[in-house]
Each structure stands twice: as structure tokens, then as C-alpha cells.
Length: 73
Image (cartoon, rainbow, N blue to C red; front, side):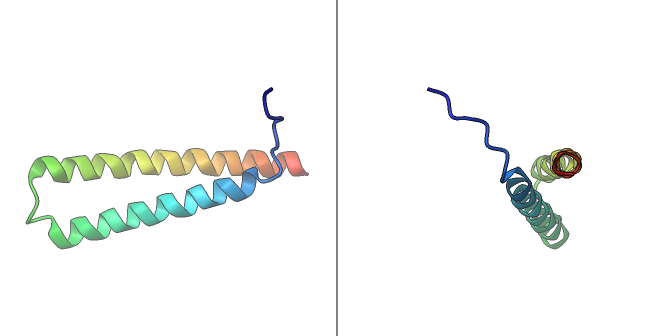
């Protein structure tokens, strides 16, 4: 039997995802700033691409948070 859709803690889960994504993004930016001259151009591009995807994810998470807030009202 499928579990019922419990949305009571969605905002909390979204906030944790936002915080984790921001942390990963910042760590990668710091790593690139400190080691950009030591890593290959391919690795640098890979890390930059990951951060671009993280930025898109953050935008999506924030939109979901707005939706959650409007549903709670």
C-alpha cells in the first residue's frame, strides 16, 4: 500500500536542501579559487558546470518554498 502524501514537513526538507546546495556551491567556489591553477581545464569546467546546475536547483527550491508558503496560508 502506498504511503499517504504527507506534506507537513516539505518546507523543512526544502530548507535543508537549499542549505546543503549553498554549502556545496560555496565549497566548490572556494576550491576553484584556491586550486584553479593546479587542476586541469577539464576538471575546472566540470566543477563550474556542477555549480551552474546547483544555481538552477537553488532557484527551483526557492520557487517550491514560495509554493509551500502560499499553500500554508
